[in-house]
Amino acid sequence: MSRSDRVLADAEAVLRRHSERGRSLSARARDRRNASIMRRLGRIGGAIFVILMGAMIAGWFLPLGTNGVMIVLGLLLIATMFFALLPGDRPVSADTLAQTELPALPLKTEIWLETQRKALPAPAVTLIDSIGVRLETLAPQLERLNEQDPAALEIRRLLSDHLPELVTGYQSIPAPMRREERNGRVPEKQLVEGLGVIEAEIARMTENLASGDLDKLATQNRFLELKYQEAKDLGR
Image 1: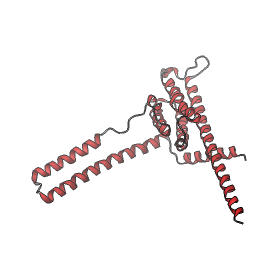
Image 2: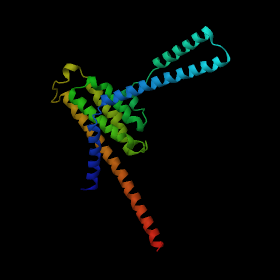
Image 3: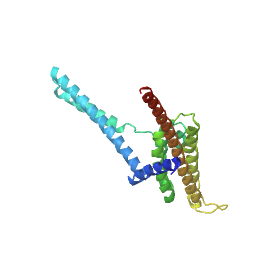
């Protein structure tokens, strides 16, 4: 088996493990919502703790009395309402994807895709889930990639231009016409085919980046082998 075949096999194995977890876009979106709720509850709990500790310390020096108790209760209510009503994460739009930093682009793209599910046909939703898994695998590799690298520019064009344009272009077609053939083409079929191409392209990019990492690792390993072999030879 050639090196490129091994890289591809490793990448596919990773993707299979992700698939076996059953983590679709909707499942990961639910995880993010739950995490957001827990953060909100944590802030409320922290505010309540600070207020109660402040009231306890103040009570050591001055009796709180009825007015003091009412003030503390009022502060608890205000703090709870403030953090409960505090706006959560900003929604991601197709326009904001172009402004997103490269390492965060896969996650932002995934969040945006999740909001499009209801407007897409079932075959497209399946591909959207597959793209989400691909993006999850791609994301760690982008943290070490320079924004001006050709690979980075290619990934940005795919995720912030081509993918949103494909999805929004389909959604702009009136619903009754999406399954009608026009000039030999059916919009729904074109959408599914386009998403399939994008999924394959993300897989190719992931493989290429992994190949580069493997090349760097092999080069470094060879350097270490030569370096320490020379040291052993000199020590004889």
